[in-house]
Amino acid sequence: MAEPDAVKIIHGNEACVEGAILAGCKFFAGYPITPASEVAEVMAARLPAVGGVFMQMEDELASINAVVGASWGGIKAMTATSGPGFSLMQEGIGYAAVTETPCVIVNVMRGGPGTGQPTLSSQQDVYQAKYGSHGDYEPIVLVPSSAQEALDLTVRAFNLAEEFLVPVIVLTDEIVGHTRERVAIRAPGEIKQRRKPGQGEYIPFRPMPDHVPLRGNFGEGYHILVDGQLHDEYGNRVGHIPEKSAQHVQRLCDKINQNRDRIADVETRNIEDAEVVIVSYGSSSRPALRAMKEARAQNLKVGWVKLKTLFPFPDEQLSAIPARAFLVPEMNVGKIVREVKRATGKPCLSLPKLGGELHTPAEILTALKEVM
Image (cartoon, rainbow, N blue to C red; front, side, top):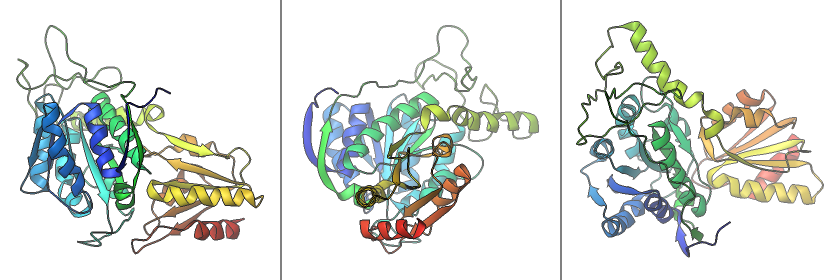
């Protein structure tokens, strides 16, 4: 691995900004909300220095729509929010999905529902990240567990957004967002750019073999019709034609589902001989890793999986694990445990925790012993 260009002690919200800048982000629109406000604050300072534009909007509805507009203007764009603001953005996220607009949305999760717990953490928005907007579509949802991953996965979010022309959600949480730690800031190995059409007739929504169209931008001389209704290759509405409507929605889903192996990402330890495997994500991965190490020290055959991609869910990676059972600690009522059970077909114990507090390694170790 190449030496980092710089090493800083920063928290996860700052790291998201650094990752976005490295990925080539030049536009941010947002509205301050705890515990995500630092993303906007640091963006306001950093973007002008790299030739970018920061806009504080009147609310989260305006924010996501400004991001969509900026993206169609040809620049990489993002926003950041937390639970209540994320709820307000859902219609705009669906619009980005149907118009195949590449953009990045950072959601620093806090406790809910409603105004909930503005200063405490949760993992309660995991299903909202996938199913929050109406209709059938397939967003990509990445979930960092550290400040370093907040940077790295923000870079990856922009790459995936440009490659598949989708909104990509970086689903972090208050603990990751506000934990200061060592972060290596290095030039990414690859920065994806949207694929431009060549000479000749340009059909804006005609898919390539991977189901993803080429992308011309406004102001570049292309004739582009962008409509939030279901449309054909030219952007013309086809909501009244069932066959063409079905084809459009199916393609939006296929371009993600048929590339799952290129998108889904997990990190594993000691799964080869494990009888029980802890499946964790986000800040819960940290005490889960410690619990696994303590279990191994007590000669318990325990493995550990960290989900870095929540959606598309890494079905294939989990189904290949030979363990007989799984334990899923989450800071919610127990949601991703359902996905683990569906993917593996094996016994899965949920270890939920509410109230804004993270699991302790001791709590997870106790649950492991009960399972075993």
